[in-house]
Length: 180
Image 1 (cartoon, helix red, strand yellow):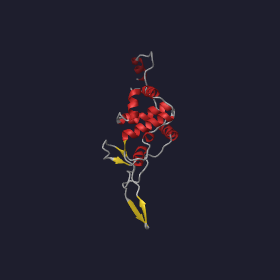
Image 2 (image 1 turned 90 degrees about the vertical axis):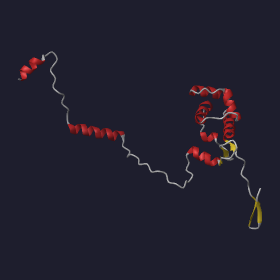
Image 3 (image 1 turned 90 degrees about the horizontal axis):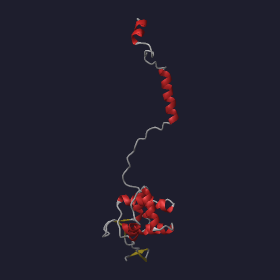
Image 4 (image 1 turned 180 degrees about the vertical axis):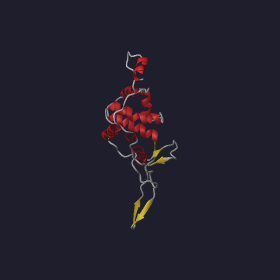
Protein backbone atom coordinates (compact mmCIF):
# COMPACT_ATOMS: atom_id res chain seq x y z
CA UNK A 1 0.00 0.00 0.00
CA UNK A 2 1.25 3.48 -0.86
CA UNK A 3 0.53 6.52 1.28
CA UNK A 4 -0.06 10.04 0.03
CA UNK A 5 0.66 13.28 1.88
CA UNK A 6 -2.08 15.91 1.71
CA UNK A 7 -1.78 19.21 3.58
CA UNK A 8 0.91 17.74 5.84
CA UNK A 9 -1.17 14.70 6.79
CA UNK A 10 -0.28 11.24 5.53
CA UNK A 11 -3.30 9.45 4.09
CA UNK A 12 -3.05 5.81 3.05
CA UNK A 13 -4.00 5.33 -0.59
CA UNK A 14 -6.75 2.87 -1.15
CA UNK A 15 -5.91 -0.09 -3.34
CA UNK A 16 -8.31 -1.49 -5.86
CA UNK A 17 -9.86 -4.84 -4.99
CA UNK A 18 -8.47 -7.79 -6.93
CA UNK A 19 -10.14 -8.54 -10.25
CA UNK A 20 -12.90 -11.15 -10.27
CA UNK A 21 -12.99 -13.54 -13.25
CA UNK A 22 -16.15 -13.05 -15.35
CA UNK A 23 -17.07 -16.70 -14.83
CA UNK A 24 -16.90 -16.28 -11.03
CA UNK A 25 -18.92 -13.04 -11.15
CA UNK A 26 -21.72 -14.67 -13.14
CA UNK A 27 -21.59 -17.73 -10.86
CA UNK A 28 -21.89 -15.63 -7.70
CA UNK A 29 -24.79 -13.58 -9.08
CA UNK A 30 -26.58 -16.64 -10.46
CA UNK A 31 -26.42 -18.21 -6.99
CA UNK A 32 -27.59 -14.97 -5.33
CA UNK A 33 -30.52 -14.52 -7.74
CA UNK A 34 -31.56 -18.15 -7.45
CA UNK A 35 -31.39 -18.05 -3.64
CA UNK A 36 -33.31 -14.75 -3.49
CA UNK A 37 -36.00 -16.29 -5.68
CA UNK A 38 -36.06 -19.56 -3.68
CA UNK A 39 -35.68 -21.57 -6.88
CA UNK A 40 -33.87 -24.86 -7.23
CA UNK A 41 -31.62 -25.80 -10.10
CA UNK A 42 -34.31 -28.23 -11.31
CA UNK A 43 -36.80 -25.35 -11.63
CA UNK A 44 -34.34 -23.34 -13.65
CA UNK A 45 -33.59 -26.37 -15.85
CA UNK A 46 -37.35 -26.80 -16.47
CA UNK A 47 -37.67 -23.13 -17.41
CA UNK A 48 -34.73 -23.58 -19.80
CA UNK A 49 -36.45 -26.60 -21.36
CA UNK A 50 -39.66 -24.59 -21.74
CA UNK A 51 -37.58 -21.97 -23.57
CA UNK A 52 -36.17 -24.64 -25.88
CA UNK A 53 -32.76 -25.03 -24.24
CA UNK A 54 -31.34 -28.37 -23.14
CA UNK A 55 -29.76 -27.21 -19.89
CA UNK A 56 -29.61 -29.73 -17.07
CA UNK A 57 -29.54 -29.07 -13.34
CA UNK A 58 -26.01 -30.53 -13.27
CA UNK A 59 -24.84 -28.15 -16.00
CA UNK A 60 -26.44 -25.18 -14.22
CA UNK A 61 -24.75 -26.29 -10.99
CA UNK A 62 -21.40 -26.17 -12.79
CA UNK A 63 -22.16 -22.65 -14.01
CA UNK A 64 -23.16 -21.63 -10.48
CA UNK A 65 -19.94 -23.09 -9.02
CA UNK A 66 -17.88 -21.31 -11.71
CA UNK A 67 -16.54 -24.55 -13.18
CA UNK A 68 -18.44 -24.16 -16.46
CA UNK A 69 -18.01 -21.36 -18.96
CA UNK A 70 -20.93 -19.87 -20.82
CA UNK A 71 -20.99 -19.16 -24.54
CA UNK A 72 -22.21 -15.74 -25.61
CA UNK A 73 -25.55 -17.29 -26.55
CA UNK A 74 -25.90 -18.99 -23.16
CA UNK A 75 -24.96 -15.80 -21.32
CA UNK A 76 -27.67 -13.89 -23.19
CA UNK A 77 -30.22 -16.68 -22.66
CA UNK A 78 -29.57 -16.98 -18.92
CA UNK A 79 -31.53 -13.83 -17.93
CA UNK A 80 -34.46 -15.00 -20.09
CA UNK A 81 -34.49 -18.39 -18.36
CA UNK A 82 -34.10 -16.86 -14.89
CA UNK A 83 -36.94 -14.43 -15.58
CA UNK A 84 -39.21 -17.35 -16.49
CA UNK A 85 -38.10 -19.46 -13.52
CA UNK A 86 -38.16 -16.74 -10.86
CA UNK A 87 -41.22 -14.86 -12.06
CA UNK A 88 -39.39 -11.55 -11.85
CA UNK A 89 -37.39 -9.67 -14.48
CA UNK A 90 -33.70 -10.54 -14.52
CA UNK A 91 -31.29 -8.68 -16.78
CA UNK A 92 -27.76 -9.33 -17.95
CA UNK A 93 -26.71 -6.40 -15.75
CA UNK A 94 -28.07 -8.35 -12.75
CA UNK A 95 -25.68 -11.19 -13.61
CA UNK A 96 -22.79 -8.71 -13.82
CA UNK A 97 -23.52 -6.92 -10.52
CA UNK A 98 -20.46 -6.22 -8.39
CA UNK A 99 -17.92 -3.55 -7.56
CA UNK A 100 -14.62 -5.35 -8.14
CA UNK A 101 -12.91 -5.09 -11.53
CA UNK A 102 -13.90 -7.93 -13.87
CA UNK A 103 -11.22 -10.05 -15.48
CA UNK A 104 -12.00 -11.15 -19.03
CA UNK A 105 -9.02 -13.54 -19.17
CA UNK A 106 -7.98 -16.33 -16.81
CA UNK A 107 -4.69 -14.60 -15.93
CA UNK A 108 -6.45 -11.30 -15.06
CA UNK A 109 -4.44 -9.27 -17.58
CA UNK A 110 -7.59 -7.86 -19.16
CA UNK A 111 -9.49 -6.51 -16.16
CA UNK A 112 -12.05 -3.76 -16.63
CA UNK A 113 -14.02 -1.79 -14.04
CA UNK A 114 -17.31 -3.44 -13.12
CA UNK A 115 -19.21 -0.20 -13.69
CA UNK A 116 -17.83 0.10 -17.23
CA UNK A 117 -18.91 -3.47 -18.01
CA UNK A 118 -22.44 -2.78 -16.72
CA UNK A 119 -22.57 0.44 -18.76
CA UNK A 120 -21.61 -1.52 -21.86
CA UNK A 121 -24.39 -4.01 -21.21
CA UNK A 122 -27.09 -1.51 -20.30
CA UNK A 123 -26.18 0.94 -23.03
CA UNK A 124 -25.74 3.90 -20.71
CA UNK A 125 -23.48 6.55 -22.23
CA UNK A 126 -20.04 6.84 -20.74
CA UNK A 127 -19.16 10.17 -22.31
CA UNK A 128 -17.01 8.74 -25.07
CA UNK A 129 -14.68 11.16 -26.87
CA UNK A 130 -16.30 10.44 -30.22
CA UNK A 131 -19.66 11.52 -31.53
CA UNK A 132 -22.37 9.05 -32.34
CA UNK A 133 -23.59 8.98 -35.93
CA UNK A 134 -26.74 10.97 -36.53
CA UNK A 135 -29.42 8.84 -38.07
CA UNK A 136 -32.13 10.67 -39.95
CA UNK A 137 -35.52 9.49 -38.87
CA UNK A 138 -38.45 9.28 -41.20
CA UNK A 139 -41.19 11.77 -40.39
CA UNK A 140 -43.88 10.19 -38.32
CA UNK A 141 -46.96 9.66 -40.42
CA UNK A 142 -50.06 8.52 -38.67
CA UNK A 143 -51.77 5.44 -40.13
CA UNK A 144 -55.10 7.26 -40.25
CA UNK A 145 -53.49 10.19 -42.10
CA UNK A 146 -52.02 7.81 -44.68
CA UNK A 147 -55.41 6.14 -45.15
CA UNK A 148 -57.12 9.52 -45.59
CA UNK A 149 -54.49 10.56 -48.15
CA UNK A 150 -55.01 7.33 -50.10
CA UNK A 151 -58.78 7.85 -50.06
CA UNK A 152 -58.35 11.39 -51.46
CA UNK A 153 -56.16 10.02 -54.26
CA UNK A 154 -58.78 7.41 -55.12
CA UNK A 155 -61.57 10.03 -55.22
CA UNK A 156 -59.51 12.32 -57.44
CA UNK A 157 -58.87 9.49 -59.89
CA UNK A 158 -62.61 8.92 -60.28
CA UNK A 159 -64.42 5.65 -60.80
CA UNK A 160 -62.51 2.98 -62.66
CA UNK A 161 -64.34 1.45 -65.55
CA UNK A 162 -63.98 -2.24 -66.08
CA UNK A 163 -63.28 -3.37 -69.62
CA UNK A 164 -66.40 -4.43 -71.47
CA UNK A 165 -66.88 -8.15 -71.53
CA UNK A 166 -69.47 -10.11 -73.38
CA UNK A 167 -72.36 -11.17 -71.21
CA UNK A 168 -72.54 -14.75 -70.25
CA UNK A 169 -74.74 -16.71 -72.58
CA UNK A 170 -74.35 -14.34 -75.52
CA UNK A 171 -72.15 -15.69 -78.22
CA UNK A 172 -69.27 -13.38 -79.03
CA UNK A 173 -70.25 -13.42 -82.66
CA UNK A 174 -73.78 -12.12 -82.02
CA UNK A 175 -72.38 -9.33 -79.77
CA UNK A 176 -70.06 -8.26 -82.50
CA UNK A 177 -72.92 -8.41 -85.04
CA UNK A 178 -75.03 -6.05 -82.94
CA UNK A 179 -72.31 -3.46 -82.53
CA UNK A 180 -71.43 -3.48 -86.17
